[in-house]
Length: 92
Image 1 (cartoon, one colour):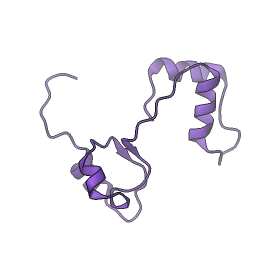
Image 2 (cartoon, one colour):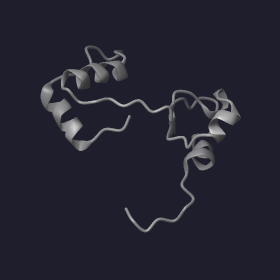
Image 3 (spheres, helix red, strand yellow):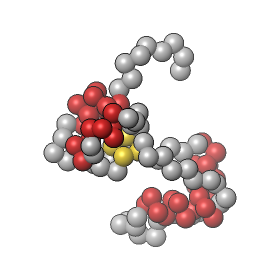
Image 4 (cartoon, one colour):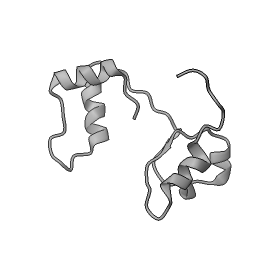
């Protein structure tokens, strides 16, 4: 998830939150943001599994933003292979 500072501020001040420690936090956040009128945008570039769980063709056609699962893989290697920006940038 990517959240703006304003969205986080509104969420915190609203008192909306998870109803238990094992609540599905992404669904609860979706409900909270919807109730606050904050738009939610889905991106297929946030991957819910490991890179090995997707076809190489699919991943070669996308610029992945993240991978959610990290068991039985080296997360640093995944970052270097799939996510690290190799282009030098002058701006922040």
